[in-house]
Length: 193
Ligand SMILES: [Fe+2]
Ligand SMILES: [Fe+2]
Image 1 (cartoon, protein in one colour):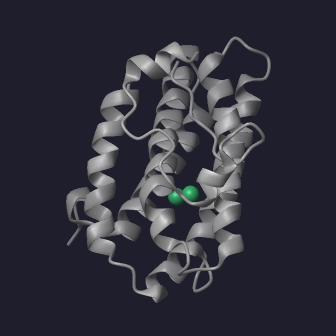
Image 2 (cartoon, rainbow, N blue to C red):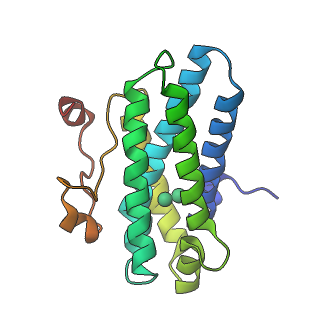
């Protein structure tokens, strides 16, 4: 029996997000028309913006102190590196010489990151499961945040993904895993451009 997204626990829903993004990158590879390519790339970017947000605001903070600290810190930096490309892809378009290359490199970065999260027995998710985190509660909170973030970001590729761990970011707060911009209205974000 297949579970619906609403019924999944935290790890199952995060893995389902991973499969969805992998599928979009695969479709991008074989897509031909420019509009189709851009639509697929933007959908992947949107999914990744929302996925990194719910992990950083809810799942990763719950892991802090429960799993390997270095693994968790690397996950944040991998997200941030991916966000630079995500913002770049969303600002650009398929007429650009390096557009396809940017999407390909992003897909490779995500492939690596997903492996780190899903790796058998030592991955982030396995460590979180082993630590006994409440996966039902985390799933409910992530689903709620996902809905809000989707409502805010869908159709707005101009709203950039925010990094947490780079120079100029509020790194102290990122290490404490506090939400950087909880429920900031879309208008405010658009004004930041
Ligand atoms: Fe993930
Ligand atoms: Fe992640």
